[in-house]
Structure formats: structure tokens, C-alpha cells
Length: 214
Image 1: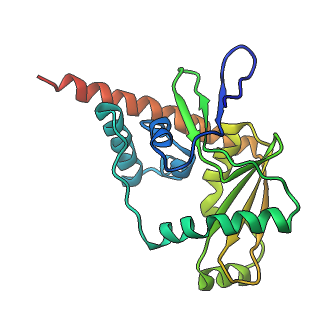
Image 2: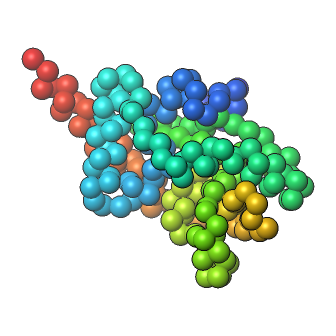
């Protein structure tokens, strides 16, 4: 289902698309997504590699091959349990969605795949964290993990949200810390500007490669 704003679909919500499905990969193909926004903000090899990966998806019409490690598989295996934990512990009705995308001023898209939406203005992100790292995080205090800032604020920008709950979870652990993060307009402005520049460079690279064709 698509959610439209005003007379033009600025934000589209796909709640009938399963994450990891062929349709999901098709929606994400060739566009910057929130899980990689931190790469875009960082000037370096990771940003360049991500730009080439998206360019390859645009040029080939196929999603890039993805790497799956033990930690990623663990996240998939524990996702349903973590989702139920959050819903039951915080008495929240969480709506699962497959993908959300936002139209940029140039007409192209950016996207995000949240773990859920709560009402119309709140999102949920779940990160599984192995016990020793979770204990280290708890010993360090209650500050939100900074490594997730770009993804969480990016989700709020893409989906027009006011806040996001970030849950750190591991099956069997007696505590799963939750961080409530509010929308930061200054940070989002910096992020959106950086992504528009990245998108321009991405499509400039695509055109450059096209011109190399005999």
C-alpha cells in the first residue's frame, strides 16, 4: 500500500512487500538506503565503494550480490522474538512494513526498511547485539549508540517520523535496552544535503560508464 502526501507521492510506504523478497530488492535497487547513510556521510573508500555498487545496480538492472555473515544471520533468526519482546514489554501495536521511500527534489528516490511503525509518527529499529558487547554497552551508560545515528535519523527523514525507538536485543539476555531518539532537524538537513550530492555523483558515474560503451 502507498501513502501519498498532497498531490504528489513524496513518501511511499510499502507494507505489503516482505523484506528480503524479490520485490523488496527491486524497490531498493540503485537508490541510497538508510542502512548505508553513514557511508555517505563518511568521506572515504566506503562511500566510493557504495557509489559504485549502486551504479552497478542501475546499469545492470539487477541487485548487487550481498554478503551474509554470522551476525547478520543471527539478526534474522532473532528478529521475530525481538519484535514480540518490544510489543509486549512496551504495550505497543507495531505495524510491520517492507520498505519506505522518499522522493528527492530531482525526482529520484531514497529509501529505508524499518523494523516497524508505531502509529503515524514513530518508528522501530531492532539491533541484535551479542551478550559481551551488550554488557559493555550497558556498563558504558545510557547514551544512544552513535554508530546508528545516521540510519535512525535517516529513517525519520525518509518516512516523515518524529521519533524512533532503538532496541538492542539478544535472545535469553534479561535486559534489552531501548533508546528513544527524537528527530534532529539540523542533523537531517546535513544528511539530506550529503545524500543529494551523493545521488548527483552516482548518476554522473552512471552516465560516464554508459558513454564508455562502444
